[in-house]
Image 1 (cartoon, rainbow, N blue to C red):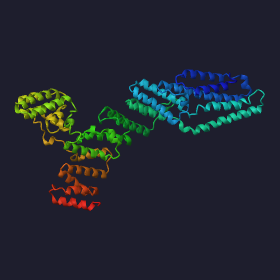
Image 2: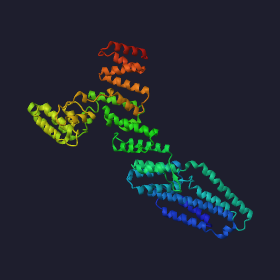
Image 3: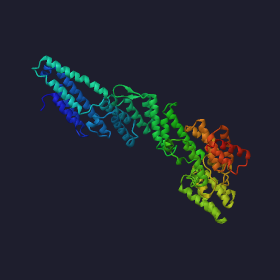
Length: 554
């Protein structure tokens, strides 16, 4: 069928490269092996008649067959990893397409097998390096060009390779083939940007490990490097490693619902691998710390997910939202106003709600009915709620019927480890002033044994955010708002919040500080505060209005 081994090689190259199947890898490899064997057993007499030309043609055909053999092996590896591709597709992959193939394989691992053993991870890296070495380590040459190159070489050599050809003709043919071979590196050099670097492969592998929670293996690869499949070791530069860690941590944190859930903890574990002086990792760690401080300002962290903060173009929006939510809650219109017990560690417990309704009924009926209902609600709350519920139950008993102290003590003795789970919801429905955060813990610890009045002293009430200026500035600094102008702007926002809340003392103090600092955008604040009829100090009013008139743009 074929007049020479070179013609056979050409036919095999065309057949294998055009094969549309993605499950015949063994057959394709056997065919390529047979073609290579035929080239190695070329007729000795033919080779002796035109030694130089035959060697060039055989070398070209053998190189094309070996390259295609590597592509077929790469297709076999990709199919085993759940990504079946044709030979032509793999052979024509450039840098972007090769990287996309690797990411698809690793993405499948993240979705389907994140809890693989260390041995399986090592095997995955071995397969990826073998894939790169087989198909993506050298510049891609389209599969269609291999047969053409082989055919050109065979034609040039074969036309002058008959036994009757003169030595000069044979030498000319060999020279022509040699020139064609020398032109190949220049064409490959034009495609050098399409090679898949080993560092990119290591970077994607570490990204996959971090997403799967294998920070131990990721740290090993980042510190010690990994074998590149060619006898060497590939490393990532420290700056590139830190950028990779910060990028993965941001991706994981974007899927968190609050700063304490599993995704946020995984992001924190990733950031622990970065250098202490890495700017992107440090900025992300400070952002997480800022989100964790928001509840201390009376803010419901579930109303502002981490991904929302990360997407904000102006981080001052976080300060505005914190101040605005407090005003909405204070007015009874905000999201937390409908669930006052959220910060009392009662998050939607149906049991707590039923106790709350019973307590509310106890406070709403006649004296006898109030006493019976309060005793029943207090006993149930104390049995299931812990210290905070026991303290509140004692208060309800005292309010409802002024029962004997021994009843209150008996209720308080029913302390269980889940302290505080019901205090918020019971307080909300019963109309008792809100305690949340650390104040709730302090109140429950102080009232667990004596049966307090359940109302809370003023010192236990949470301070509004505009009065916690130091904490507000700390959050702003963690968000990157650390310039002197940013501090003045935050004080301006806090003063406006105090004025809207009717706290003229706090608003006046902050406004005068802004006037002393020469913060000109505060003129409108000074105008509003100076025009307030409740402001009793005329000297302060005159100073504020003068400042407003001086810097009013209109």
